[in-house]
Length: 62
Ligand code: SF4
Image (tube, rainbow, N blue to C red; front, side, top):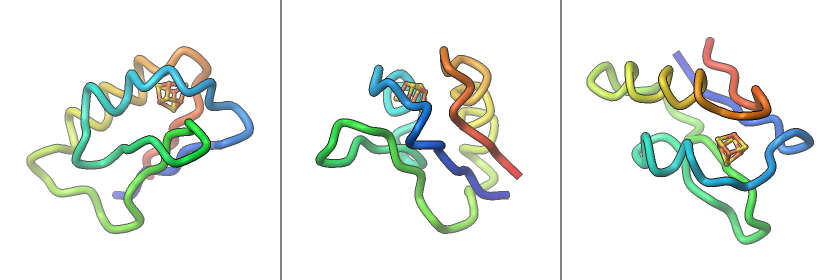
């Protein structure tokens, strides 16, 4: 499973980073980016919760 952030939707609230900083980080433009590697099993639930809490539904995990 991998996460992707739609940068055209992200409003830079940083919630996903605070919920799962091993998958999400803020880039220099203040937009969230996801790691390009597979999500580790032990943080998948946190990443999915961050996806569910994103206020603009910018995160896809598949
Ligand atoms: S929670 Fe959503 S809007 Fe907020 S920084 Fe993450 S991807 Fe962007």
